[in-house]
Image 1: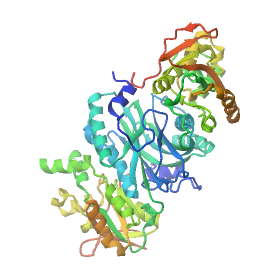
Image 2: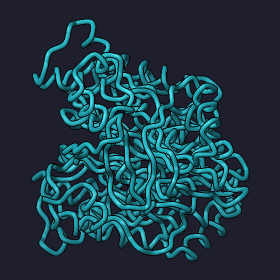
Image 3: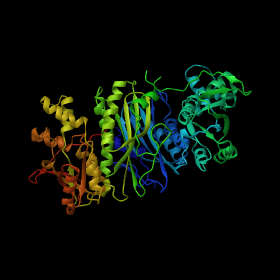
Image 4: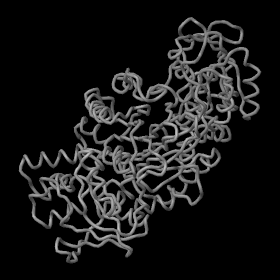
Length: 320
Length: 320
């Protein structure tokens, strides 16, 4: 039986010089932020049967556990520094740990984000990551920063993850190829870190957040924090390649209120349209203008012709 | 039914100016460390039936969840800044949440440590806290810093928490008063933050860690990291007031290899004996000299007369 210390040593401790002054193995990790920078910190907890299915592929789960946290840094415009991992496991299964740690480190290395500490314990499978990044003071893309007249943008495409979930829930069927493509979006989201950095650089954008519980629910946080409203063009919402081949009603529903998208929704002054497009190009991330921030509270939808559309949708409540 | 956002607003969001530049409610919290200081970061995950009993008092659980994390900062000699809380709950029970949050904030406020963010989700009860502190570069009390000839010290008293556990496990019985006193030690540990700060100030101490899995197991981490050995006087180990009234064999066993003590074990040069005692007085924490760091690897025990004692003991392995 693998002990707690062997488990950490075998799967999580790495012999390479890192950004941290002191990494895994002491009471605390030690980290010196770049002088003059501000720390950005976020925690996400992933629970079996809530955020992933029992028996989920451990490599993809390792990827996704860190991806959802990096997505929060991206939404703030912060550069990743490191993360802690707290892990409750029903058993110390070497096959599972090997896959999980490989998926985790593949993404961590791609973003130069170092595992600096954590905790392992026995218990129902639970993955809790806290991630640290840094940014220039005043450059954070805060939810309360949207201004009337701002464009509303989203990155990448929406809804394919929700489509994969619909298959899992027997709401619809897809061809094997389509399902595989949609499932890839659900299991292996790509956190938009490079785009977030580009948007925070000047800064180009004002408010931002990452879309995890569906655009409709999540944009509501920007509107509430900024005390504004918005109108979105439902037909401008960029559908994932698989969803784009579905009928219009489904496209509208799953782009507007899908879930697990991990794209950025952000606002920017009209004067920055070209700068936003350039940030998208520089970061290799599609950006699509989907609406406008308005003084009137609430969220309204129009179609491609500007006609009002009534979408009865809401975001995901973890206790609903 | 309490929604996720109502739950956070009602029990965890506080309307008071804090140390953080941005607290709960955005994708990330923002925090500016004191210029020139180093960050200390630690995560601990508490799982029902592993770290606490099902039905545990929520106020005490809120206290203990943060206490074990602050204890890690104390062991490094860091000053608390803030923490994130990720919480998986079987249900959003307002009575439980009220007690838990009161216990949590009572301790947080006592240490001026601000809740800056986190996550809540539905799932088997799991409490994951990541805590942030800061200290002067070079002053951290690291596990690899013990030197041959150093004194070994422990703070406070050991073993009363283990005694309470023994009652819970039907290993022995105690009077109601004794049980209540021992249980208080198990449920409401006092993190030795002030002592850790005093020991790191000059610094007075060299190596330190917090004793969570029993002194014998935990001091092994200092010995391994520092490539040294130690001899401890088992009869010098300070027993808690309840344990002090038990027989010698039990006293030795539960002080040397109890668990849940959350006291500090640290080493310091012989020349700093008076400074260690002064750090204890200044922080209102008892400190007891219990042994010596030696060149010979391994951990040895002697009794009050210096005669060798064979204690067959080991620490707590979470996957054992």
